[in-house]
Image 1 (cartoon, rainbow, N blue to C red):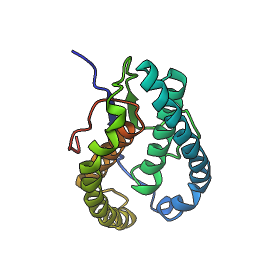
Image 2 (image 1 turned 45 degrees about the vertical axis):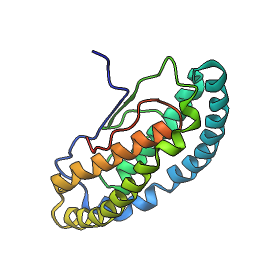
Image 3 (image 1 turned 90 degrees about the vertical axis):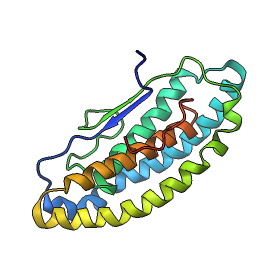
Image 4 (image 1 turned 90 degrees about the horizontal axis):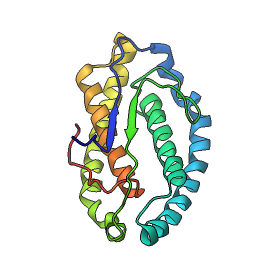
Length: 187
């Protein structure tokens, strides 16, 4: 049986710091600044990779590793400061983090799909807009629940991990890192 092309999960924390909830947005500013610059570079790398895929049918491994690393780092920051799912401060670049994130390198990529991936992703964009709006409200509910009780509501935790999983699958697809069309699923 073939291994899935993408695996993502975040273990549920038994407790979260109430005090840290108040300052995570401030602590994450250095990550946001570096990720903004890396995001620009990853966009340029993706454009160059588009031509490489068109010519060779492959995403150059070093470029692929770099863009996956940027997506992974960005996802860690979202886990920490957008969804408030973990108290563990994300490392800069590589490093251990209580989050499972694996992407399988594709040996071959479709030369034709690179022309239409942007079109195929439109239904996901609409679904993620709705889910993102709902998640925005429920993150606020979770933030207050965690502030009051020290516990993230488990149902909302699973929902937020699912939204982040879906959005990350779409990001990987749009960045040409995989040809596996993302399912319309939080799982």
